[in-house]
Image 1 (cartoon, rainbow, N blue to C red):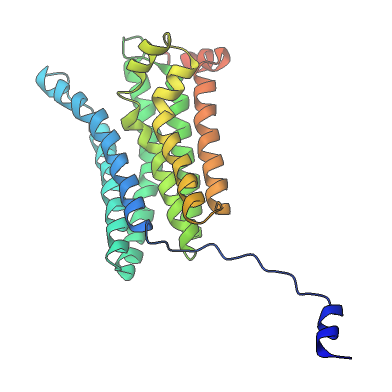
Image 2 (cartoon, one colour):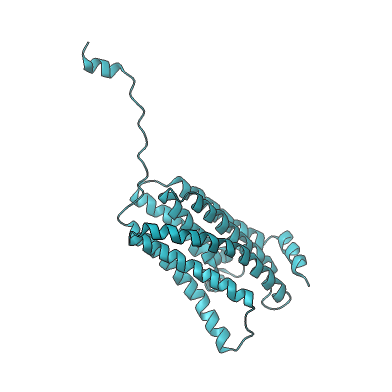
Amino acid sequence: MTATAIDRGAPRPAMSPTPFPAQHPWDRNFFLLWIALIWFGVAMGFGPEIRKHVANHETPYPLVTHVHGFFFMGWLVLATAQVLLIRARRVAWHRTLGYAMVAWGAAMVVLGPAVAWMAQHRDFGTPAGDPQFFSIQVIDIVSFAVLGTAGVLLRATPSAHKRLMLIATLCIADAGYGRWLPTPLEHAMGGHTFWPDYLGLFGATAALIVGIGVYDLITRRRLYPAYAAGAAWGLTGQLTAVILYFNPAWIAWTTKLFHP
């Protein structure tokens, strides 16, 4: 019997799936572009608000708000630095800075709800009061905490790590986009209802989260499992936050919670 006949009759080994490529030539610019778009949303949201606050000599923000703002902006600076370090192939520096970001992120997880709680109590009963908005504030930071923790735990797997950390940052980036997109969308789409508010608050960041998957489909022809799970978590959180915002039971509970 010939070797060819033996080969034909023998069971063929199972084909192993092609590994997800950790690197692609476009990655250097893609991740930097996404960070730049986060900065764009923050600048468009906070810039005019701060200028108006100063120009009108409004009451200074509480100290805890300044501290929270410092940590929020600091996170974006650190995230930008991490992308630039990878572009420069300074992997050791990237890892060292990552340890600082763990502590920085933990502080944000504490400061975010604390500032939201104080602001809701301070503004209750005033034109700025919006107690049911607590759903957006809490779910944003929970999504950030869960995805950031997952990203740290998977830091030995670059494909998972960088996608999860980027989605985690996008889950708090609505603080910028959500300050300027809702109003024009509410005017265009018929008022303060679910879809104008969802698209105004989360439309941009949701598109950026989905855009990571589109990019992977273009460059790798498939989605990375950690990205799919992280995107599902982040997008579900955004929908849940707006569903709660318009839920009568949630409105009643938060009104009672923050009533003086």
